[in-house]
Length: 188
Image 1: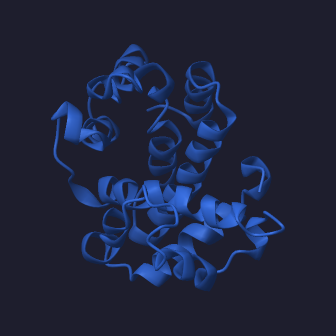
Image 2: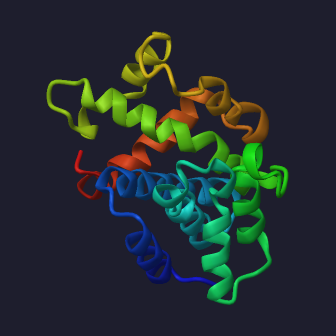
């Protein structure tokens, strides 16, 4: 098992971009909160969120290698199988074809990944640029504006209802609260 300290060490070793680090902190916080709600292991889910894009700076020009490098780093730590490994294999399945999404942990990552970025985008267009001022209603208002954060796959996020059994408004609220709890780490 990898510890959170080891995960953060990997993240900081391989990710220099502060905004990308903050994205992974946000996803880690949301994943930990989702684990509690869905009966998962909060430590493993948080580590998955913290490391899901750890190799992005090194693989962004070769999407078929995204997550494969992270799997190699985990292997060096003696982690070669188990739910965390399968989750990394399925995270970038569009390009790697290593594994299909299975189980709540993997679907949680799939659905919250883009949502954290969407919430940050909503925050940054607000005058105070503070997560404290963001509400579910303000997120939903921007959600309906297709030109806003148009690269965000709203359909991927909305799968929270079918795959996790969490209504979209509740999912946004849970994610927003998790991010607000670490607002200092996120610089928001």
